[in-house]
Image (cartoon, helix red, strand yellow):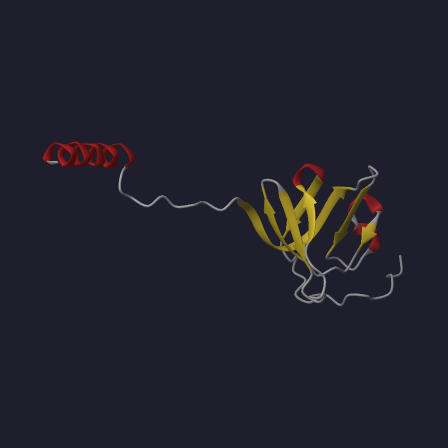
Amino acid sequence: MNRQRSIFAALTLAALTVTGCEKTEVKSDTVAEGVIFSVAYRSEDGRTEGFTRLNDARAVPGGNGSWNVDAYGRLTHDYLFITTPRQRDLGPQIIPASRLVSIQFGDGGIKQVSENQPKPAN
């Protein structure tokens, strides 16, 4: 019985020495997070779509999408998660990172967005 305890103690000590006793910190795979200024991505049919925070239809990435959009994003290595604070009843929009064309985080100096405004005059 003593011999089994000695062997167990030796194996436990060896395992602790090899693996260490410190907790390993799990790292988040978040690459970037914050207010989205503009984003462009390829849709399933291959067209480029997107949206921008600017109140200017000409600023929409790819020319196809929305402007004057208030959105928050979290970019991971695999996906972009987009939430819109004013539409909490909608779940997040999830875009695979492989379909992203471009993304720019930041408010662009625009502190408040008035969504659903008419198209600005050119």
